[in-house]
Image (cartoon, rainbow, N blue to C red; front, side, top):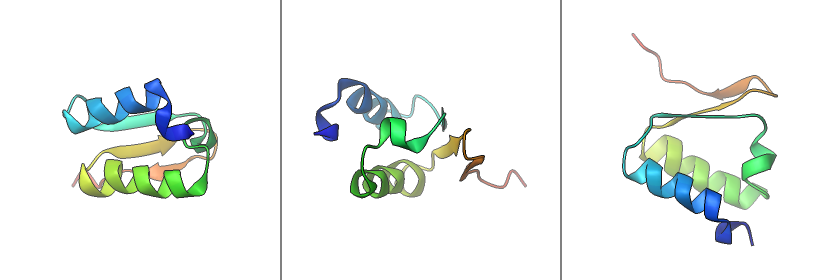
Length: 67
């Protein structure tokens, strides 16, 4: 299961510890293997922790307005 992945767990722990404020990844499918996990962790990272999530392949993501 995707939730058992050590890299994902480390990313989430570091996010909750406030070690970064932006995640840049090539493609969301590389980190989140299914839509349910994507929605759950995107909500945690972006909506709850305020971390911007940027996907380089799709040129999309969430970036707060700096103004």
